[in-house]
Amino acid sequence: MMTVTQDLSFVSLIANASVLVQLVLLLLIGVSLTSWTYIFNKMFTIRKARSQTEIFERNFWSGGNLVELYQEASQNRRTGRDKAGSLERIFEAGMSEYHKVKNANKASLDAGAMLDGARRAMRAAYQREMDMLESHLSFLASVGSVSPYIGLFGTVWGIMNAFRGLANVQQATLAAVAPGIAEALIATAIGLFAAIPAVLAYNRYSHDIDRLAIRFETFIEEFSNILQRQSR
Image 1 (spheres, rainbow, N blue to C red):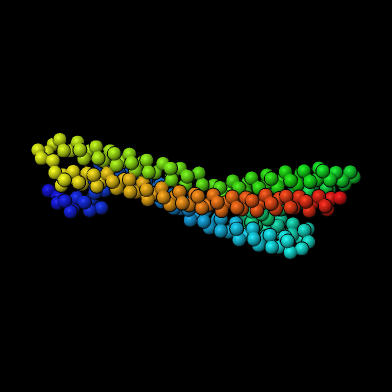
Image 2 (image 1 turned 180 degrees about the vertical axis):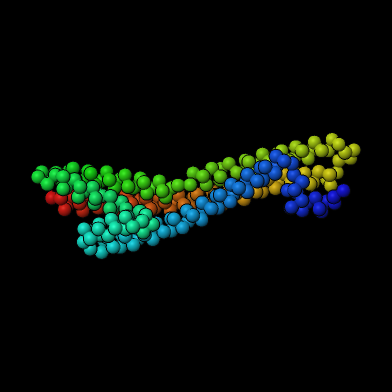
């Protein structure tokens, strides 16, 4: 017969838990590991996007030649997605469409068509970049909202088993029920362990991405004004 101390050790509690509670714990551990993977990946992605945005804004507003900046952006895009930043790809999409419409309408030089085409291209590129930045955020939100309930389900089931086990003993004591209750509470603890970092990461990354989105939208408006002045 196991002692109370042995029963209440962390490893023993998990090993002696019911199959359903063990499945709940396994699910929560898997979800937690996946969310931590996304948390670190998203942290590096946002940090890189912010750095690339600052570099491009500095180059753009330094007063350099827009054609040369466009050629450099096109080269970076062809070289690889990692080399060109989100804002640089938005700029490159707008300039590319602007030149296409301009070359197609050399006779009429419809300024409105050129500006509308460039703006639509930048908006489409903006949506692609936002989709990339926001990827996996919904998973973190789901983990943060669902994991505590999954852990609570395991806890309720474990406590039910603990009290059902009391029916087989003549005298109900704390020593008899404590292992089952402790085993059940582990599910809640792991559920919170999975949920809390996911919620914190989701809130932080959503704020960072919103700030980047504002910078992208502001650039689209400012660059559209520049193209409008050049097309006159």
